[in-house]
Length: 532
Image 1 (cartoon, helix red, strand yellow):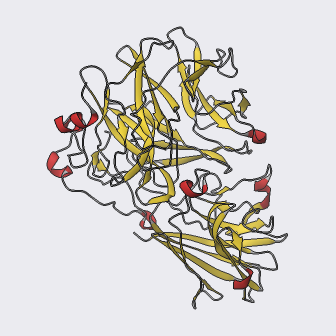
Image 2 (cartoon, one colour):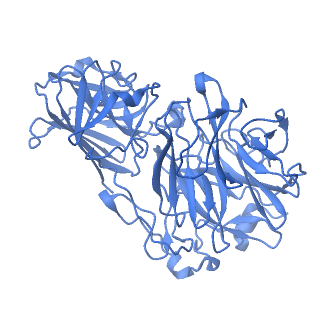
Image 3 (cartoon, one colour):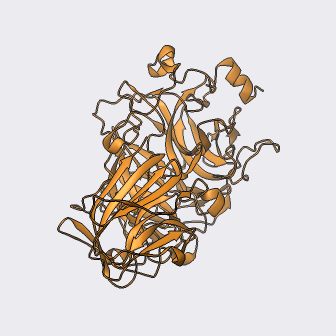
């Protein structure tokens, strides 16, 4: 049996130095021989679409882990893990798998931490199977809708104490939900209840014992059909940990009941070296486009930028004569020919906010919110007014969004400061945040998950302009009472270690607004600008 290294040498798999625009996808080797950098779009953000028929990963930059993708006609829809943030479960739309636009959130009441979901369409109706932790207890829930744009039902608890659901209809016409650990559950015909126990159903390929991974962690089963086979793709190796953890493995069967045949060249995607641009690649959904080409959508950490979380990657698939898939994108360091699309692309989305429209869910989300958290906010005359909560960033449910660039600057104006601290942060979780706040009398400093009273200074102003720069992990902060004369905060930080492997939680370091105390804080003219 040929090894993965043999396949790379023979050209069946693309290696790190080979052309990544296969002829089957309409590309020339000469164009792919030179690595490219990202073009810059709105707010100087990097964008994947190179405007020459090719793209450069990531196709959705920032922390959008565990992508589940559904093709519906000539459109594609995707959603991702939203963890404890709310409004949550943002749906995205694309016409080419490269340029994505948010439709908006569909989950408005917190149900705990939301992880890897499965978005499917069955008999004209849309279903979303959701691992969540309502009341702190692990379960799988389901939402459904007649139209992808909604309205969506409230979540229904299926009472399955597992994660990573993968929906499939068997040749017997029955609906099944496969879950982590090689198990499955029979569903009712309407897909809204279980109709049997959790049972063992499949086994995944095991890597050699001397591979350096995080753990076995069989998870993320997803299904597709091709050539009379039912294919099951999944992840093993652990989601984080070493750069060489996580991978995409495939097996297939003629029946939903097995037996399952393992792909002879598993894993079909795997980061084999810390020198590669994308680490811990895995958790794939296979998608067939309108021209019968196949693609994998999965996530990975950017080399040196785990702080950005797991980003969405797009990899072309080639099929061999035996009906097995091969990843054709190599290490994803070079441009790849785009899926063909007859529709125009929307390149990029603004992260700056003049607060003239409600962007909660599509951009802003509360971290670890209460049931009625959105009652704290209102829009008024081009400002966002937020009622205070708690006493610090740890318990005030900061309002955050996912950054998408390696370096960026954020700024906002704080108004009507009268005793309740308002400010801006780079926020990971309750144990790790950096930033500052103002209460009309003082400047408060936050770092390493705590307030530092020794670095409190007098700033007697009800209006303060604040700015934070994250320049490739080097963080500086500035403030001004008149918007012209800026003072540099005396403390600077290096934040490259603020990520999953240090802190857990599978989150990212996010720009955030905070309002604590019992009064209100008014935010005006939030600006985001990528620095390259």
